[in-house]
Amino acid sequence: MPRPNKPRNICKMPKYSVFGPKGVKMNKLNKVELRIDELETIRLIDLFDYTQEEAAAQMNVARTTVQRIYNIARTKLAHSLIEGSVIVVEGGEIVLCDEDCEKCMEKYHTKN
Image (cartoon, rainbow, N blue to C red):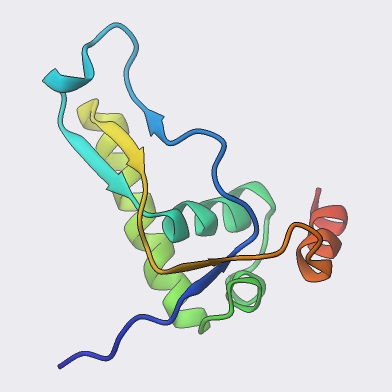
């Protein structure tokens, strides 16, 4: 029996939770579920240019876990872009940081 997932620290919830091709009804498209922790790895590594080690420390998980989550997220994003699927951001074992989390705010100001 696999051990349960360790909750990942997330600095803030995504502003939007559904993305898809314009001009096509959502019910006619396949959906790809992108978990909140997967989106967080994309945000930290691709948007804020964190290393996997920095992202792992921020999310309070091992670097290998961040690498695995990141690879899964990129595969889902590529599939959605190539196939024209709708991305729905939801789910995952997460812990939301306090709004005034010093660790998050410090990283935002140094990486932006």
